[in-house]
Image 1 (cartoon, rainbow, N blue to C red):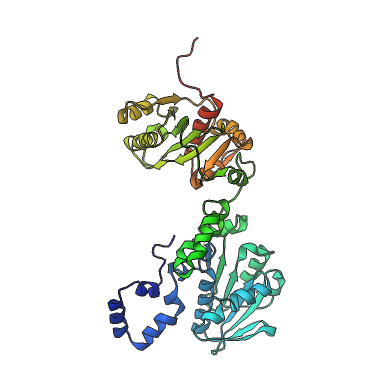
Image 2: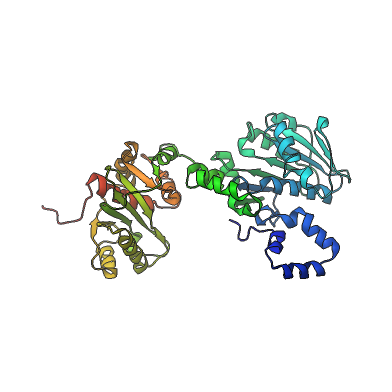
Length: 438
């Protein structure tokens, strides 16, 4: 996300009083005034316009990140820099455009370096240099037909009623000047058109951010409350972390199903199994080693306690990660797939710790087929997740019935490890390699 979310003003405020006095004494008066009032200097890293020759700056971030501040500051800077420029301000409705983008706490009137005049009945802002900004609502996309603009700001585009039509009309209206540009701000939702817009493309700069990136400007009580109520949930991933969280057609697991199985704590003891999906060939720095820990509760449910998956480790490195998890959770069994690594997988694990309770298994069916009985356990309420495992759950939701794996990544290593562990713990149908009688 943001390497250092603090603004220059925040950095100065964190200095010792003596340093602050020395800086203030050596700054020219106009520079000191700018430090205290200029939006660019009060902005954190994610609110500063990116470099490059972009036509669209898309800000996808959690609630409270400061998206409105960023959009308002950019519009004010453009209006002041180009006299008589014409600007479009588009909200979900006209009421939203006025209440948030213009008159809000972080709106244009609140932070403009040179305050424009606002004529509500005309839906028009006018700066002293002749620049104007007109308000529009996405509920009426055809209202953007006809006028033309140098710049535009669209706010909370993910909740626009006619988003694609409005954005298309806005594109066609940005036809003034040498470099027409727009900033689009929103908390992300898993909408296909928005995900396509966020994909790498020429002329589009994307800023991603979390609520916590703007912690310096948010009340501590607010942060504590939202993290307590929504941290570690699907809603929290979307609204606080600014992530796309979507369900795929035909997925074995749905997001709402995983939310329903989430618990705050698991059993302190009980039969514990670790599922291991080794990297292809038993090693290789490009692949991950799936390592997932599950425990049988006194209620007969399987509790997912931890995801200890490691990426880019040597065979010795991932084997040590497995051994560490086994020691941490006092594992009764380590179920390790040996299809790709063969006997080498067991050998590598034994080299790290001879006493590891390893049960090598051989897959005779594809990953999706193996996962289907485990997905049924979730439907029956027989599995619980102790907290959130975002990377693991993303892979689970990428397994498609009859359609293979749809990502993220090229292999569901974490999900496969989970399947091996829960199959051993609750289904007792793990197929182990052995001598087949002819």
